[in-house]
View (cartoon, rainbow, N blue to C red):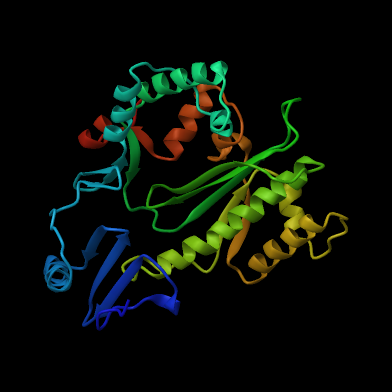
Length: 311
């Protein structure tokens, strides 16, 4: 599609973010299928953009956004909260009974048995107890920070490890993932290193995304990645790789390049302070609550009142 005059699609790739910057004013359009968010440096430039788009396409102006893609937006003078309370309520009402801890359940969606349905009921009960929780953004700090972690074969029935990452921006989580690895690793260091490489790839994507939003502070020269494996950090910083596994060698080269080009920097963090810990292994209730606070995951009532989260 030919872009309107002045609008830019960085690197001419197929993206869902468009921006226009001229005369010290900026407007950004976020598009997903037929849902759209428009924001800018002033209400005037936003209204002008809506008027222009309305003259070209059949559009419905819903005013200030309250819900987008099933995500509710709650505003306070100094904070912004994102939650899915209505969506969770819809699921709970559909199935009528509830109960569980999240975890491996998603791995059995193709062939569930009665035990899995029992776990589903526990999941629903868990969702009911946290239905009003959401992510709270304060806008500070305005730099991207990352955490990576892995759990190496802790179950005798498992042959592959679990790894994940968490990224913080503006005071809360903006990207997170927990996944079962497709390759078999021989040590804790190897699985931690694979997790670090996957997180580093996400860093590049997030930096490119932020570069497309001229209103945001430009990414720092290097992004701080926190890992609780000193062995993995030492291996990443070493110029010599003497391992025999080809897939580990490839990941080592990728992480080394990101370090040398200063896209990322690596820092050690103790496991109890690693925000990615709950996504890779079972934790006590206390540690789950502490990491939730670190991610700024809190009840909606706490955000509306402007107070600190309580659990």
